Length: 252
Image 1 (cartoon, rainbow, N blue to C red):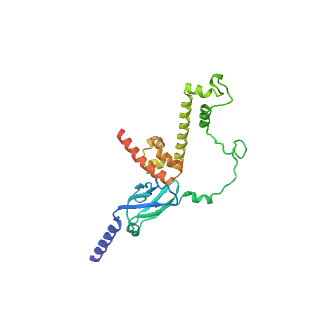
Image 2 (cartoon, one colour):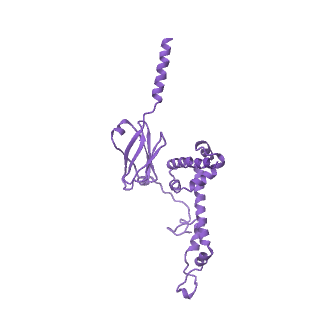
Image 3 (spheres, one colour):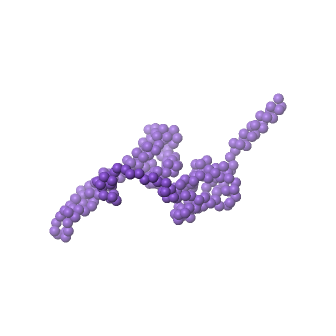
């Protein structure tokens, strides 16, 4: 009986020791790469979900402990993961080299495709406009083939002047902005299912659509969303969700 009690005590003590996490300290580091711009690289502690950002010299500091995994992520660099050991903390300053994405261009496979350029419909190099962009371009650019009057000393289209007075140009700019936001919204909906917003981010179901619109109004989030960096998009949307839930709580 006594031996059994001793075994139980030792097992309980071992469980407590294993469950205790090592205390986190400030880890100072510097990101290096074969490029000059090192500002804005995110360093995410996968264990704590806390993040830091590099300055112009690539320096950063983050709370971490032995056994934590750091994720280095930026739109212009390949993602880098680092499992921290005692040696990393003993260095004083942790140096991590990241790889620019441009180094991967040699792996790109180019295939012929049928498009407006290959069919000769649109000249090579000409910008292809969306419907809203075409309307705005027509409304704001001069046309040398149309004569407004000899007193103006040249031939220009009357449309820009009429649009200036009517306010149509302003309306078209707003239409273009709406088109862009609708595109961001579709991209966000394709990236995250509704259940992710409700179950993972803990956004009430009736507020999901409002949160999506709230997210695409954030310039920093839109920049990362456009870069198609899923890791950083996921990280930032979690931060936005926390702020949005605070707004909901303050209104109720």
